[in-house]
Amino acid sequence: MIRFNTAGPLRGARRGTGTGAAVLLLLASIAAEPLRAQDDTPEPEGALFLLLPIGAQGTGVARSMTALSGPESVWWNPAGVVPVKESSLHLFRSEDFLGEATALSLLGSRPGLGTAAVSYLLWDFGDVELRDDQGNFLGTVSFRNHLGILTAGTSLLEGLDVGANLKIIQTRVACRGQCTDAGVTSTTYAFDLGGRWRPVAPLVLAGTIAHLGPRLRVFNEEQADPLPARLRLAAAYEVLHHFVNRPDLSAELTVEVEDRLRDPGSPATYLGAEIIAGIDPGLSLRAGYAFGSELQVDGVGVGVGLQFERFNVGIAKSLSTTTLGDDTEPVQITFGFLF
Image (cartoon, rainbow, N blue to C red):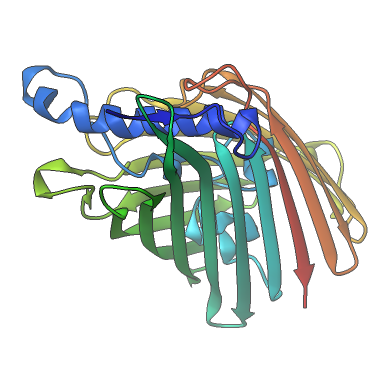
């Protein structure tokens, strides 16, 4: 018999534990196939890494991002990139017990046309040692997920922005050493469709359909899992104008509801706040709370951002724990350069 050893000298004990969780997720999705028709539980989904947060702004407001705008909107609502008027490059980084996430986005804007972006995300869930019953080392199994995104957004009418993402999704399990096979690579595509409407100056209403696409086939057509398609509806309201009439000060409160497109009925609710003081330099303070989000329990998010000349940096932390372990979500770091 061949067994996984997740406690070996990989990239630290935390990575080993996280990869063990990834292995359990993979095996659980396979084992669940024969049971799908026997109960009323929602059908297991594939590519669940698409539900993990990316970016300091989104993490700081506890994922209540659909109604907000900025470069990070490529990961949440493509219509949110329309207000971005300068070309920029942004790097994203996080690390936790599940693995390491590294991403980048390149955005460009053309007056009268809109904003476009190209983005790439690598989720590295680490390596697992492969050993036989006697403990002899056979090889290593690696778990990597890749995501490429093309984003386009524009203004249709005064106050109405729309956007779309085209995604290429790939999950890869590779084996090096004395392996019975070279591993499994699964590739599919998906779309995000989003909109932001400002009926009056301080109010934004927004919605997104995310991760809409064909099933992700793991081994064969019978074991093809649906993508975690989601519907998000949100609103944001700028409250500070009631008290202070200064263009360099703002405070937006956001509320968002997210639910599955397939098997709806278990919505998650996100509340967020973002206070921005100054333009250049500018300081952003962020906080939020998540209720009933999948892959995490209820909890607070906090973050801060700084804009100085052509640079911006953000850092955020979610204080909620995931359902896969006792650790909290990772610190998210975002660095941007305007050009």
